[in-house]
Image 1 (cartoon, protein in one colour):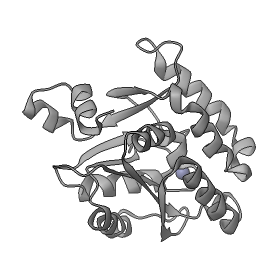
Image 2 (cartoon, rainbow, N blue to C red; image 1 turned 90 degrees about the vertical axis):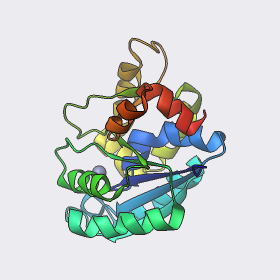
Image 3 (spheres, protein in one colour; image 1 turned 90 degrees about the horizontal axis):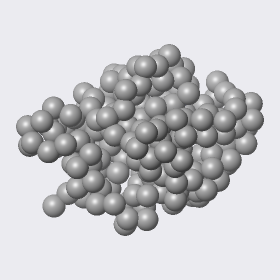
Image 4 (tube, rainbow, N blue to C red; image 1 turned 45 degrees about the vertical axis):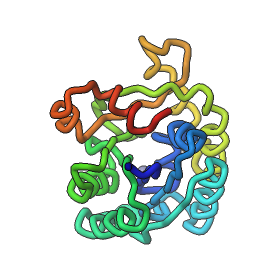
Length: 217
Ligand SMILES: [Zn+2]
């Protein structure tokens, strides 16, 4: 039986909530444990002690377990990220992993994404999420997170040193509404791209059906 554990990997405090916060709430409500693995303290974007506190508060508001990877901001390397992710896989045995999409203008995001693609075994579902620096994102599934929207906003609001400076609330609202079209028009959504889509073809069911099966939401 698959574990009801989801691991979400992000480079900087706020990344995971931006791309995955609503889905995290949905999973936790459905009885899952969600683990945030935040690779750095985001010291290039502010005081690392404050950013650590902000990520801790955001994870608490979501109800997620939180770990920091201890990597340098703007210095994430795939070679160092692979053992970090491997340790988290061994510790938590997640059946689903979420990480940045690999088409992104921030190299920390790209390095982490590629590391997860290398490390995750074929039996682990790997989904890529988007963020403000993702480019040309082509989602393969869209999740309605309307009922988790307030929690996502509260978690993002924990990142007081970043939200207004970077206009992050505007980003989640714009993308949340945009991703809802056409299927969930009027809702708030998050979108994901399945990296393990080749397995889907092998077992002969659609990506969305597989995702619903996997998370039983
Ligand atoms: Zn980031």
